[in-house]
Image (cartoon, rainbow, N blue to C red):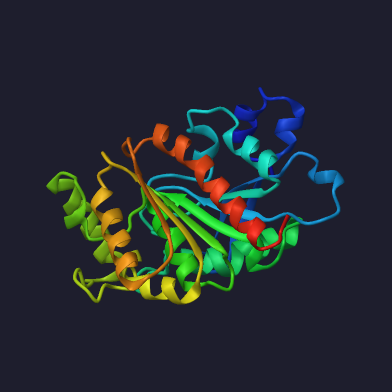
Length: 285
C-alpha cells in the first residue's frame, strides 16, 4: 500500500525513480499494530531474475521511515546509492526513543522482535533478496546506530556488516554533551523502558558498549563514525577504545561535523561503499 505522503513528495520525480521506491505496511503481531517501511529497489529490478543484497537503514530517536528519503541534503541519495551498488535499501519505522530493543517493562516496545522476526522475513518474502547473512547488512544514525550495532551483535546469523553514524554507543547520558534537563528527561525514559542499568563495566547488554565481546566473537565487519562536534562523540570514542582493547577489528573515523543531516548525508556513501566491499568479499558480486 503506497503511503500518500511519500507519494506527494516523490510524484515530482520521474516515473522511473518513483517506481523504485515502495512504501509498505507491515502488521506486527509483537506490537499489535502496523508499521511502515520504505523499500528502494535498484533500477532494472523488475526485469532481473537474480536476487539482490539488502541494507537495512535505521532512523534516529524522534524519526521515522521516511527520514532518509526526505531529510538528506542530497536529492535522491538512497535511489542513487541503490542504483550504484545494486542493493535493496529498507528504511523501517520504530517508536521514539525505543532503541530497537525489547523492553522488559513495556509491551509497546518490542522492536527487536519486530525487526528480527517480522520485518526481515516480510522483506525476504516480498522482494528478491539474498536470504543469507552474506548478503544482508544494517546501518543507522544516532539511535539507529545503536540499533544497527546492537541487532547485529545479538544476531550475527543475519548480518555480515554493521555501521553507525553519530550513534548512541552508550545510553549513559552522563557521557552526552547535553543540557542537564534534557539528560534527565532521556534518563527517565530509559529507566522506564529497561529499569536501572549499570553505567560502569561490566556494562548493561542494553547498551552497545556492553556488547563488545559479542562483536569480537561474531566477526561482523564494523564501521563507526562520528563528527567531532557531535554531542555523542564521547560514547563513540569509548566504544572505539573498548574494541581496540579487546582486539575487535573495526573501522573508526572522526570527521568535522555535528549531529546534523549534512553530516549524515556525507557519511552514508562511505557506509554504502564499506558494505559493498564486504559484499564483494563474500562473493555476492
